[in-house]
Amino acid sequence: MIDTSLLVWIILAPLLGAILNGGIYFYHIKKKPVPQLVFSIIGTGTPLIAFLITLSLFLNMVEGGITYKQELFTWLSIDSLHITMGFLGDNLAIFMSMFVTFVGWLIHIYAIGYMTGDNGFGKFFAYFNLFLSSMLILVLADNPVILFIGWEGVGVCSYLLIAFYYNNKDNVIAGNKAFIANRVGDFGFILGIITLFFALGEVNLSFTSLEANISNASTGLLLLSGFLLFVGAMGKSAQIPLYVWLPDAMAGPTPISALIHAATMVTAGVYMVARFHFLYSGIEEIGTFIAYIGAFSALLAAVIATRQTDIKKILAYSTMSQLGYMFIAVGLGFYSSGLFHVFTHAFFKAMLFMGAGGMIIALHHEQNIFKMAQHRAQLPIIKATFFIGVLAISGVPFLSGFFSKDAILAAAFQEGQYLIWIIAMFTAFLTAFYMFRMFFILFIAPNKHLENYVYTSKTITFPLVILAMGAIGAGYLNLPTVLGGEHMVDTWLAMLNSNKIHMSHLTEWILMILSVAVASAGIFVAYKKYSEFDVFKPEEETGLIGNKFYVDELYDRIFVQFSKKVSTFIDKTLDDKIIDGFIMGTCNQFITFGKKVAALQNANVRFYATFMLVGMSCVFVYLYISLGL
Image (cartoon, rainbow, N blue to C red; front, side, top):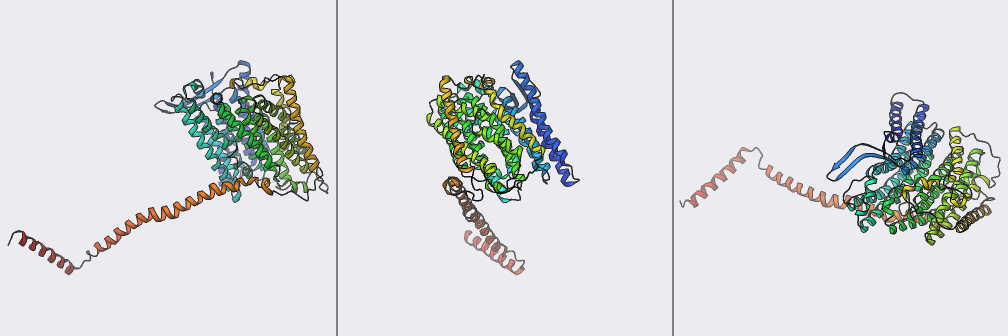
């Protein structure tokens, strides 16, 4: 390992951007208006600096095969517990940092065009930079405690950004929902870290030390720790049963939807499982559990997406579904395959969200796909890039999503997890269906009017074009051997000791052809039903699927209403009648007693003389009796 002072600057660059934009924004609202260009330069320049530093470290690692570390100071030292404020720049961390900073930078550029004219322009970029900085703390953390700081940081920033337009009550509720659902997962995450710390014999908490001492722990405690850590991932990465916050998070501005769903927050759970690969490799039961949760989450989200009408919610459910694929991979020990899908997904999902945002702006903030189709406008760059994104996520050869998703399907088949493989294949069919349903309705189905051209800002189209290149070409970085590739991403992430595909080429070809056939079937069904669909007779979100299996209502009945009843009981009965009743009752007794005593202090001399006479008489009587007079 080589010490470097650069790792912290990857984090500090966007953090300083957040501080500067926050300070200037206060000056803007209190003293004198500041041009949006100032916020834009700071907001986009600092992520670019973070990307360039990461790129320089990456290039050095390619040449020298080295790992970077940086320890700033000892944060906490109690008995055998030592926590350093340290950062780790190994292959995994630099791999994640590369596309987090790059895609994050492009989304920041996009946000300039999207948020232009908004009164909270400066505040938005302050939050945005802070969000990116928190994600980089999470990725570059040297130990689970520092990782948890970044983990919580993205949670807080997501709350601030989802509820950015806080004058709307629904946005505030959505922000609260995301915050609370994530806290449930975070509680499991904390318990997982504590369990692991004691299971390993209270060793140093750095990832290197944890991996070196993993054999010290009993299997039972490792199972418990692995499960609890994954509870955290369920919350952060929106998997069953803690996924309900993700669709509602669409209340935030579209740039934050792109940032959360593409390269940052929701992928944190997948990254965390990969970071703890040395733990999960030894507890295959939990790994299989993770894979099944991923498979059922992918299927559930895909089914719900087929009946949604809000463009951003369709994309939100597609994110949850794709995250399910990633968890299938990491659960089965194919960590590099899972991270490769994170990598390709970052490009096409960011592009899809940003394209959706461009259409929403052009159509005066309309988000219902049928109404958007009724008022369709000519948006050639957005249409072209959106089509590329739809092709990529549907697994159409030879775009990036095809390679990364196909690797996961092959992994499930090779490991003999045929139920997971069947679920994943059916989900692939549904994915192609609901994504092309959306595309045909938005761009193809007749709308019976002349479509006018609407200008789209360069700050919106430039990132879309760059991301489109990534959506097409990113998959070739991990081209499988059967297609003449060298698994470059798998090789780069060799430190994870991932399982490898070792099937015959014939089997791989058959699986690949099946995957393409399934995706083609989904596209064909969508084409038959929606290419000539009458957009003036829109579908409604009705029935079991349209109402998302009533899970929100069920959670409301079980958790929210129950919590309200408990809170009401504590407030009105336990607090008011029992605790306050006891305290106030006791006080009232003292007050009553005091009033009676106070009656003796009435300043009446004759009253006092009477009492003195009575007292003296009692004394005399006592003396008379006791002395026998």
